[in-house]
Image 1: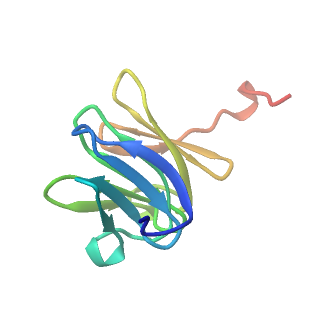
Image 2: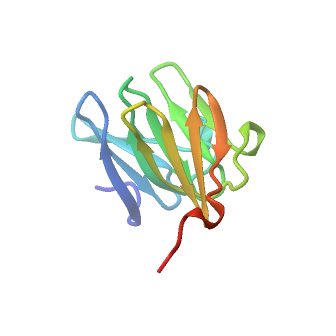
Length: 130
């Protein structure tokens, strides 16, 4: 069965494995009809996870409620948070554009990870919300 009843998001990695983000159990990979969950004990910064992105290089990005972003490769888990330039640890969606920049959504904020550096995007009066 499922490792946690509160599933937040579903995604797929480059090998075709299904991943679930959960409340309380981190991110869980469904492989060979078994769940393998990554949580704080396996290197994630938070057990409450939001969304997933598999980038063009095959890296899995997992966002969290209070731990920023986790990059998961076959070798290790690394985190991106306030030390790297995010001003919010509660991260929602991720998107990779055609130039391979990662766009990061937070509460009323938008960040861009470009060339290894995080920039908060401020549009001032250029954009309107109607």
